[in-house]
Image: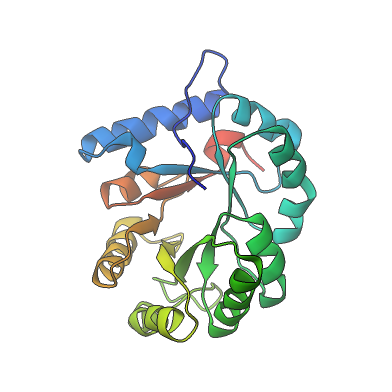
Length: 229
C-alpha cells in the first residue's frame, strides 16, 4: 500500500509525534537526505484506539504492532474508519499465525526461519496479498533474541528467494541494549547492499537519528510518540 508517511503537522498534533517529526527532519537534513526517504512506523503496541486516534488525526499513517492477536483486536475497526493506513508487524511471528499476518499486515519485519518462509509463501499465493518482507538479523548474536546471524544472512536471503519464492524487500535489526547501535546499523546496511535490498528497518526511540545517518528507510518509534507503557 502506498501511503504518505509524513504527517501534515498541525497546532493540535500530539506533542510526542511533533517532537519526533522535528528530530527526523533534522536528522535527514544532517544526513543530506529527503524527509520522504524515511518512513516513521509509529509503534502502537499495548495502546488502545483512544491513544491511537489522535495520532491518526495528526496525519500519521504507518503503525507497528508486535503481536498478531493484539493487532486483530483493534486495527480492523480503526482501518474501517480511517483511510490510507498501513500496518507493520515488527514483532516475532509464529508460523501458525502466517495466514492472519498476511491478511492483516502490509509489512512483516521478522522473517527469520525456513518454516516461517514456507508458511508465508503458501499464504501469499493463496491470498494474493504481498506484504513487504524484511529479514530480521540478530547482529549481536544474542541467544535470547530472534533473527539470522550476520554470517548466515546471505545464504538465508538466497533461500528465501530461490527455495521459497519470496520477494524480500529489506532487513531489520535490533542492536543489543548495551552496545553502541552504529556498528550494528552499519553492518545491516552492508549486508543489505550486497544482497540488493533497498529497505532498512532500524532505529527506535533512543537511536533513530543514528539509524537515519546510516541509511534507515524505516524507523520504529513508540514511547517517544505514545509515552511510557
